[in-house]
Image (cartoon, rainbow, N blue to C red; front, side, top):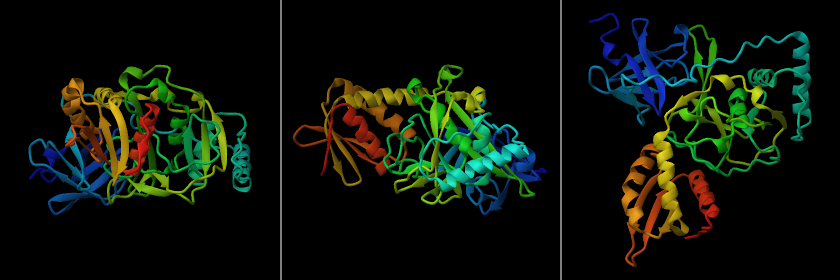
Length: 392
């Protein structure tokens, strides 16, 4: 048997929901990592029957099953989330493994930050907070390390009450928590800052972003961020001023990173939330602005094009149990693209069930079963097209 326990066929780079994960030799066995993770932060994989259990890091306790084959073609994480070996000719996407700049706070700056935190705690009025001179990211990262607040970034400067209503769709939501009708926040301020200063109106395709906390054997932690947009937008004018909202932590609960797994960096509240304070931010305040990578979102862009064709044919819509039923003015164009539409959206949104149904009276319906947050987002799209949604 080889020194690594005969697991060499498992070594390599895999793609999980489009993001790279690395299976490497680690202390005579296997380890799980990601681009930018130093050796001392690699998560050991412990044999658990025919599978492996992640012993530390952002998915600690989760099982990984690998498929047969040499080299291994892929597998399943947490029994639900598939991953596949990255093609040999593919290149790793950029914008991964990003570490915040060093934060060494001088005594006078520490005193100023403490006074600001006192103001946040004592005057919970949602007002604009003047953080003083210097890069704003420093105070944001300091707040993150103090675990004092939750953060929400937005281009809107005037949100006085966050309501649990969803207006956008999260792709690849295998955990079933990304499309809830909820208020979303994160304990990581630099991640929320990205949403404050990114101009989504100038982008096609999806954005990929997040932060994972890795743990070393001696208990140290390392926060690694990743940010990318469709590759054609990299280096472009995709920024705008925004607002970083500081929210109370109490109403939020951490969503699982994978079904049944450890908590993720995204938090959700099913109740309304009032901000404690807000900070006006500029693109220059985002420390990763020059390190945003690119990914190929051709499938997402094509799926959006096909969805536009389908929704343009909508004549009415109504709620049904667990979903929506949309009546369509069926024609040759829909006949041509309907299969491609179902295939593309099934890949991107596996948690949404879609099908076209012919009724006895000749009408054709698009039936969708999905989480409430997704349905609310779809209803908003229909309203923009002048289609109201009736009740069953």
